[in-house]
Length: 473
Image (cartoon, rainbow, N blue to C red):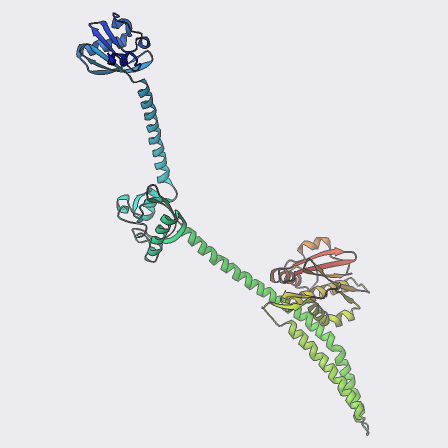
């Protein structure tokens, strides 16, 4: 009786006891299935289901499925009793499961394709570095089949000098979870050495290591080739720069020789007059020793002046490749002294305004800096002379701006043509008829490349102004 009550309350399971085509008894929830005793099977089920029931009864078939009232049933038949099991939910679950499995298989195939077609070698290792799996790229790169790789490890495929570092890389990946861009040399099956970059990631849940390997042999070769090209280019540029420096010094030397000639002309004339005077004195019977001493002193003063001139110019042309602390005011005054006679001959006044600065020291190359100052003053002088300006003036302003020293060299030489401005610092460009065109170029190189400063130019009222900006270090 208890069993019958259970069956009556069940909506997923019911039993029909039949005799021929007639339902004798029903066990289960009658309201849910809506079947009454005395009904005929053909009145309860559609033709297709009725045929299946009759066929099962006739052939004594044990189990089969039907779809009835929008639900699916699995039927078990035995001794005129039909056992109906509602499998609708099960079928839905099974359908979803099959769909999911199908999608999983599809995803697996996609992932497998991506895995094998990846542009890097991807492999799975155990904690000892032995290969559990490797994609096609890795197999082709290392020239091993998967069956052969099962007997190898990432350590055994390394060149001897990288065996120990490879073992350490595996241990670190396990210890820290990952290691990136570990570079080493691998040996292929044919013995070829390839440069490789490897990244390892440890999967703790599986106790396995994922290793991604990139062949960077071409990259290394390209870098080596690029470095050689850079070295060659640097060598060429250095050679060109040294040639320009040499040409610049030769040009400056020519100008300096001209300056020496100007500076020596007056003392040499004076010495000539003194020598002529000595001839007249020597003809006298009584020679005044005091007068001779004065003449000797005058001669020595002029010889010392000429000697100092040689020393100044030899210092100017002395090459010093070491940076040092130096006073820019002294360097500017030294440069002016070298060209002072020429400035006087052309009636050009030069003035220095120090703007109440007490510290003029910077870190750099004093001789090269003097060369720049001398070049800018000489250019200003030649501009004034070319314009036939009778009251020529060159002014040098030195000011301190935000811990930088700014040196402005301005003149009243009527300025520079606007169209020439963009090319003014180009090598071999000159506004002078016989100019070398490397003075301003070398000046810019010295200030900006050698001394990390700035050299620029602009026109002002009645002339041009060159500005040098240098940092105090």
